[in-house]
Amino acid sequence: MKGSGTGTAITGIGSAVPEQLLSNDDLSTIVDTSDEWIKTRTGISQRHLAPPSLLLSQLGANAALRALDMAGITASDVDLILLATSTADDMFGSACQIQALLGADHAVAFDLTAACSGFVVGLVTAAQFIRTGVYRNVLVIGADILSRWVDWNDRSTCVLFGDGAGAIVCQANGENDRLLGFEMHSDGSLAQALSISYNGQSQTLQEEVAIAQGNYESIKMNGKEVYRFAVAKVPEVIEKALYRADLTVQDVDWLLLHQANQRIMDTVAERLAIDNAKVLTNLSKYGNTSAASIPLCLDEAVRSGRVRPGQIIAASGFGAGLTWGAAIFKWGK
Image 1 (cartoon, helix red, strand yellow):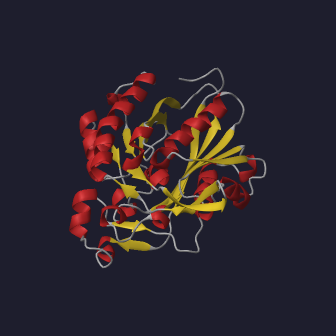
Image 2 (tube, rainbow, N blue to C red):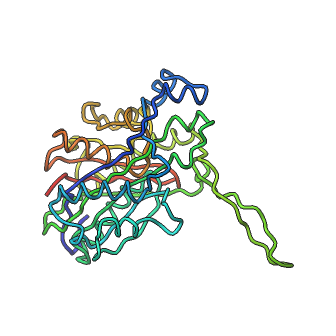
C-alpha cells in the first residue's frame, strides 16, 4: 500500500492520564451499580478523570513530550501535529494550543474528529503526508476528556468512560515502510447509536430570521447496537487491512483494539482465531478513553517490553460516527 514516496515508521510513543481515580466502588455511591456488575459487563475496574483545572491540550502535550523523547527528536523538528479528539478545549480545536505548549514553532497543527476511531485515522493521515514527501516528522495525538460529557446519573454510560492521551511520532523511513496496510469505513445511518448531540433552541432575531442556540447534550449510546456493530465490522476490517498488507492473521504478533469493552475484544479475537495471549489490553485500569485508548495501551506494552521492534501489530478503532478502521504496522524503525 506504499505510494511513490518514502516509507513511514513509528519511532516514539508516550501517554498521559490524570491522577484522579474513580473506582467501581466509588461509582456505586453515585449510581445504582456495583463493582461486580461493571466488571462482569465491561471488564473495567477503575478510570482516570480530569479535574476542572486540567485542559485537554495539557494532557495531549504531556503525552507528546514523552513520545518525542523516545523518538529522539525535539518539538522544533516536528512538521505536523494531528490531534484526534472529540472533546477539544475550544470548539475551533486544540491542536494549535498543543503546538504552542510544545514550542513546535515549525509545525502546522489541526484537529480531526473520528471519535474512538480517531487514532487509526490520524495514523493513516500522517502516513499520507510522509509518503508523498511533504513532511518528515509527524506527531499524532489521540486524546479525550469524555468525563466532561458523561451523564453521571446514567449507569449505562458513566461506568464506561475515562480520560487520557496517547501520542506517537511518525517519521520518514526511506523505503522501509512500517505501515503495511489499512482499511477505513463510515456509516452515518447509524450515527444515533452513539452520539453527543447538539440541542439548540430556536431564537428569533427579527421577523423571518431565526437561529438556534444551545449546548451539547451528554453521551447517548445504544449499547446493544454498538456491540453488534463492533463484533461484526471489526474482524472484517482487520482481515481487509491484512489482505492489503499481503498478510494473514497468523502473521500478527499483537492484536490491539480500541479499549471499549472486554466482551467486544474477546469476541473479535475469537472470530479472528487470535489467542488471547496476543491481545493487548489495559481496559481494566483506564476504561474507554476514546481516541486515546490505542496509543495508551501500546505505550504501556512498548515500555514494559512486551511489544518489541519489528513485531506486527493489527490495530483497530471503532465508535461514533459510526466509524471503524484498522491499520497493520510494525513497531519501530
